[in-house]
Image 1 (cartoon, rainbow, N blue to C red):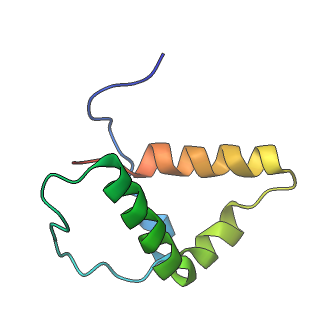
Image 2 (spheres, rainbow, N blue to C red; image 1 turned 180 degrees about the horizontal axis):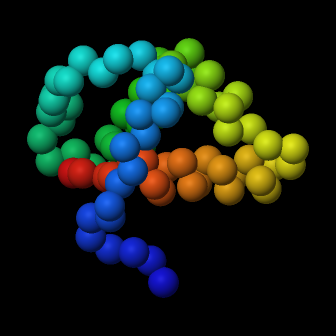
Image 3 (cartoon, rainbow, N blue to C red; image 1 turned 45 degrees about the vertical axis):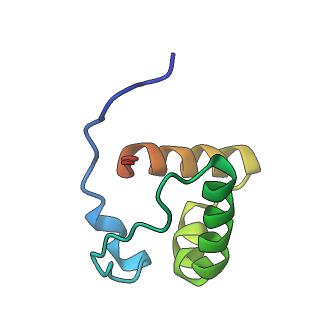
Length: 84
């Protein structure tokens, strides 16, 4: 079963040391973007922010690929709430 709606997200303050401080800006990149537009932008953002995620990636790495994936999933699930 997939959860729908907003979840109670944990603070995540213990992870602040792994990320640069957010600028707090909201920016509309493209009105009425298609799925292809969204995927293209996500790929660009990932490339441009690899250095920002290097520390957390090392912290979430486990002794197997499966455990690493589980830790990444748990981090995202408990600390990131998607908002359109």
